[in-house]
Image (cartoon, rainbow, N blue to C red; front, side, top):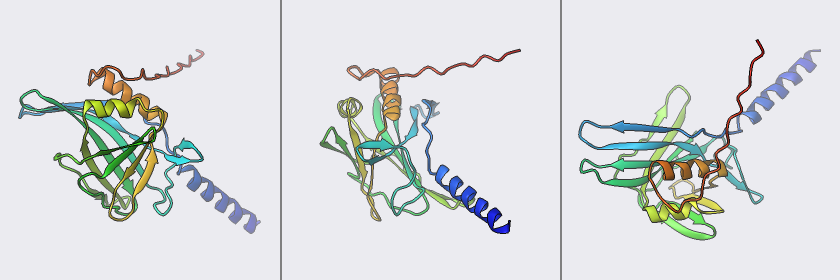
Length: 209
């Protein structure tokens, strides 16, 4: 009986560990802020990226030696004090150990087989350690032109590589994230020539009274 109970505990713990490696799709959401200095921004909340496995983008947080780590990407529209808009791609890495993302041309996309490299912006990055969970976070902003963004968002197959000192991170942009980014580009950035995002309507369940 004791052995059976122990076996159940092991199976339960293993099942929880495996389940915790599954990532949920991020819902489309934006945050806007206007500073007293005159500048402001609109952020598309960063979306979970995926791993490229057997020809498919799979949403898991396992990544080789960096188990239980993940990358998120988002878009920011930054408006200067003079009213000039610029576009930034926001990258956030979360994991158990630092990878030390490099400054400069450290975000590389493979857009339908063709390379596109983005350079870090002058916008302040935010790196910190959560003492409660013992997890680290590294983030960076990358300058991107509207022309470059159009190519990224109209891609049928979009992979990326983050150039870091410890280990390079490779992944791909899942379809749900592309749809969120396309929606932001059309609604907030007012870009034309972007593929129409597929927005799935949420089913509303009626309750029997």
